[in-house]
Image (cartoon, rainbow, N blue to C red):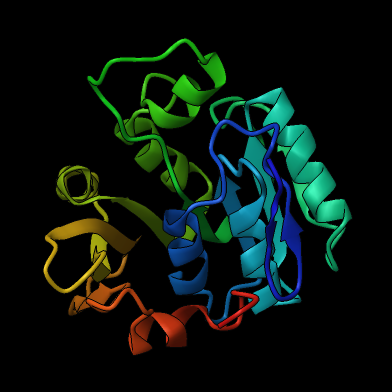
Length: 232
């Protein structure tokens, strides 16, 4: 399978269980990176989020953690072949990962299937199911690698997003931004882009529609992603 070519880099994904997806592109373009100097990408997969965030903020020190060996090697390759070969890609579980300094931003496109049937591909199961990284563990990971001003951004299906908001709130985090995503104007909300922190604020709430009824990209989606898509 050929890779996905963006304006400033290319992502090969033939060795990764989870391919380049609209979810990843949305999060990489949407996440709040303002004033951040360091970023942790949990479960980097192809390295897409790390590369997008590095394009957006060239001086950002990015560490990307990946448990699957094939995906780790592909993320290394994608970083090496990009304008930003210094992204720190680490092969380990996030539970075993150790780092001496807290991160300003933590970002993740995490596994979210809790009870669905699994297929025969172990790597894909790991990438898609929460067995290896539950929502509680994900929240605790953010708390372990953050400071009082850190932000945590992620994307989840809307139902799982509601559950995550509840768990995060119970663990002392506040939802600061919530963008609900729908594929087309006549479809239901399908995804939640969320940013949490330790600081309580009014929630910045929005709705993003990806495509118009004629299948063209909406103006809001173009504004969000035009720095990345090759033909946008």
